[in-house]
Image: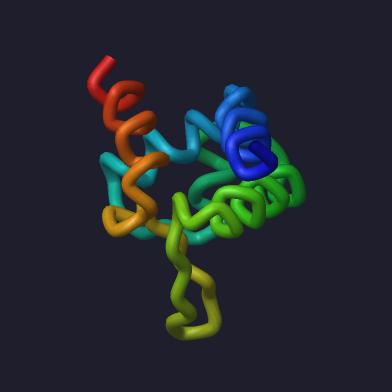
Length: 89
């Protein structure tokens, strides 16, 4: 139950959904690019990315002094089913 509460709480935020949608369509981006695209602060974007990364919805990798975030196509199946419905809408 606790895991599902965290998942639905994370997905209940419009900015997190925007991030998921953006990364699923455009691929790896750094925090400032994501922040600019969805028009919220760098700090707020970073906090949203931490939550989504913690639930394995996003992956991250460092390259050339930046951290790139991407949609995790290998995320847990239960979460992927929910997001597939959202992303098709």
